[in-house]
Each structure stands twice: as C-alpha cells, then as structure tokens.
Length: 636
Image (cartoon, rainbow, N blue to C red; front, side, top):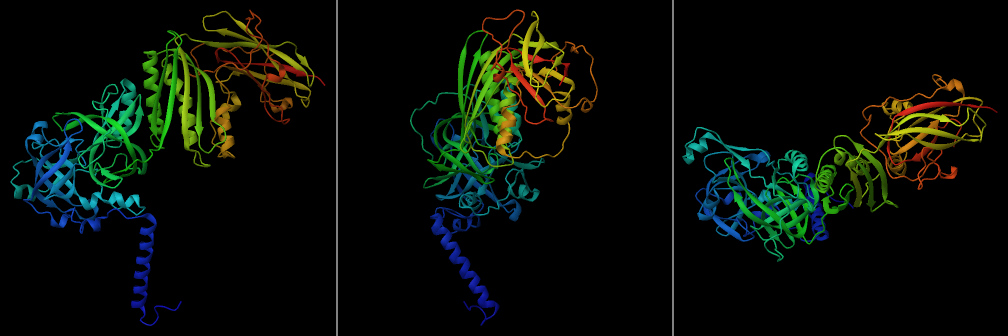
C-alpha cells in the first residue's frame, strides 16, 4: 500500500490516527460496550465532572446506618482541591442532618458512599478528618477517578492517584473557609474495617497483623452471626457491600459501600482492599449492625449476607464487583479428633486464591479450629494427614505424619501442610491451580516419643546379598524399653570390608544430610513431579531409618568402635515427629499381638547404584528421637 508520501508527515499522522481509531473500535466491538471512562464522565448527564463542581453546592450522600436500608444525609461542597496528575483532585464537603449526626459523623465503612448534586453523581466519600474536632468534614474522590476501575476490567492501563496517603488542607484554604484551628487539618482515608468472625485469641492476632500491613483495621465480630434477614439482598448505590477473604466457620469480611452500578458491574469502596489488581474475592451483600462511636473515628460493625458475585478488580480507586461472577476460592475442610475426650469436630471454609495471603488465611483457619476443638494450648502428640487436590495435576498431593510438641501441638500440627501448600503455589515450574484442601488431625495430650538407645546386628560378618537383622533398642518416654527388628539386605555389589550403618529417627537428619542441608549448591530441581515427590515422600517422624553406603572403607571419614554409640536422652532435638505405621516390626520385649515382623519385600530399600545410599525405613507408633551407629564386616 502506497500512503502518506504525498503530504509527508501530515498524511502519516492522519493515517496513524485513523489506524488507532479503527483498532480501538475493533477492541470495543470485541469486548462489548465499554462501561465508562473518565472522559465519558464529562459527557454523561448522570455524572457531574469535577470541572462543574462548585463551592456552595448542596446535595446528598447515600449509605447504610443500620440493617440493609439505604439512608441519605446532606452534604455541602466547601471547596475543590486541585492535586495535579500525581495525587488527583478532591472535593471537600461537610456532612449534616439528623441521620449523620445520630452516629457522630463520617465513619469507616462509609467509604464508597455515593455523593449526588442535583441528582448527578459527583463521586464517592473516601477521606475524613483524622482525629480532628470536626467529624463531619470529608473528601470526595471525583467520579472520573472512581470510574477508572472499569477501565482496568477492560484490560486498559490504569493510572490513578494513590488514595492511601492522608491529604492535608492548606492553611490558605482553612482561612478562606473560616476553619478556626491551629492544628493542621489532615484528611485520612476512611478505609473500611475488616470484620473477623469466628476468630479469636492468637488466630485473630496473627491475621490482624498481616492485614494491618495492607492498611486494614481488624475488628472482632465474635462468632459468625446469623443475618436478621433471610431474603436475598441485591446491591444498589449506597448498599453495604462485603468483600470476603474467607467465608465459612471463620470469616474475614471488609465492609464498605457501593458507589455506582451499571448492568452486572458494581464499583464500591472508593479505595483498594489489598491492591492486588486482578482479583477473585468473594462479594456479598452486607448488614450493618451498628455504628460504633470512637475518639478517633466512628466505624461500622456488620456481617456478610448472601454471596452476590466476585470482586474482579482491586484498584486504588475502588473494587469492581461482577454480579453473578464466580469467586476464585479454595474449599478447605478440617476434621479434628480429640483423643482425650473422644470428641470429633469438622470445620469448613473457603479462602481466596491469593499467593501473598494463602498461608496466613490457611494458618488462621487451622489454628482457630484446632484451638477450638481441643480447647487448650500445650503439649501433645498428633497424627496428621492431608490431601491437596488440583486442577492440572494427575493425582492429589497427600501426606501423613506424626508430631510431638512440648509447648504447642496445635501449631506444630499445621506446619507441614502449610509448607507443602506454599511450596506448591510458589513453585518455579508451572502454575498449580489448587481446588480443594482436606485434612484430618488426631491430637492427644500424652507424649508418645521413643528414643533410640543403641542398635546391633544379629551377626558381625555378612555376605553380599545376605539379609541381616538389626535390633534397635528403643525407650518410650517413661516406658519400658522395646526392641524393634529391622531387616537390611546387603547389596550384591558390596565390597569386602567394614560397613558403617546409621540408625536414626525419620525426623532426624543424618550428618551427611545436615551438611547438605546447610549448603546452597544451587542445584535446581529437575521437574515439578520430582519437587512434589521430594516434599511428600520424605521420611516421617515416626520412622526408624537404617542407612549406609556400601562402598570401600576409605570412603568413610572415620571408623567407629565395635560398640554402638548411644545417644544421651534430653529435650527433643527437633519439635517434630512421625506418622501412621505402614509396616509392623517384630517386638522382642514383649511382642504385641497386633505386630508382626515386616517381610523384606515390604521394606523400603534403595539399591540402585554402587555409590548410592542404601536406606531401609520402618514405621512405629512413636515419634523417634536420637541416632546411633553400628558396623558389620562384609566377607566375599
């Protein structure tokens, strides 16, 4: 095509402009009708752009003071504060009327409340005086800024001014308005409080600290409350809106106000929740129980109602709710059995799929449910199993283990599940879409640990290919000593000479593993499959591990004496322990009726290469502590 050369740069510029117009037109056709942008706010009669807002104008604001009923209160425009491209413009208002005076002024939770002048929407309340003498002064973010969140939904770049910082009213404006105060007028965002329901004590404190980092003020709402209305509540401008990070037996709900609705899209809050951009939070209608008075600032206390859709955008100028949309959440179920009382309780919740919050939300759910189920914090032994289901992996990721803690068995029981989930979500190979988490935990106060005292082979001289019995002496905590027999096959390729065998608990690293664990050799994991296998198939705390290298004697750093080396008893070296027995081994003193010695083909052994570590693993009913060594002589 020959274009643009006749009139030089002018023709080229026209061509470029026309091309952009065509491309944008095609984009709009492909995406559907573009809701509204800041520019369109200048034209649409339902909006009043900032350029038309003047001091002295009067209007109304909409919000919910109690229940779900939308109320109004009066406002007067005091000034238009120009902030430039970086900070954005604001409208300084003063609220009045019986409704707002009854609750003591502008309150947290009113953020997003729409403000109208002559029936036209000028923006949303986003700031109020910070610990000042006049709780009725506030700032309105213009509607042009609020509508930017619609642009984000269509995939356009959003460049909104940050709303998280306080705004200071200039001395000149204070004088002009007759605001007689020597203290500076600082207008702070009326960020919505986050209601934590069914969450108490340390679970509350843990999540509260995390959420405070996002500028959210946690408020305890006690146990989850039943709504006063069973009817489905829809969202309209001025309605109370809930944005949930968790929903179920425990919940975390940010309460705010809906600003504007178009079709199945609702913009609310006038500020961010976590500023995550694209989001998938749970959107609900909400009920306001009361407005609580405070020296610093009043705040709404409420609870979520019916789910209305999903929060698809979380931007600095507001959140966007898609009515009927599906939130991106993970169902979590936990069954807890208190073995001391026999009580069994089941808990469930949904948590949002957020890489930065998933560990905090899951820990809060688990620790609250465990503390509630066993009603204590302290020593105990637990048996834990869990299963993580995903959309894009062939099989569920499952793991069982046993744990002991002398101080906090509930917290100890959550660690491995959290570690596996975070590693899975944060892996470097591919995105893993977690669809469900199920866990089962049995907890008892009794300490079920056993320490390895010594180990000895049934014979000192062995032949390649021969199976040798290793008798491991255990002393259960405050119990009688027991003997566990572990059967080890000497590899056919074992060379003549001395073999040094290490006997340890599955939760205890061998000296070689400790050395490797402290080094960062930068060796990458080869695949996601191996990454998952390494996490789920590692030794358990209740296992006895016998391991050795079947190489030449000079490969070992030092020889050991003929006698096995006992390990002194003491405090548990690692506050972890193992899980349900897969194999039963022979007891010598005395043998229990339900236990039988494992067949050799049931014992896990690694005999692949001559230089490989040979390892035999046997399960027990205890968390195994300690380590010892012994030696045998290979004769060819």
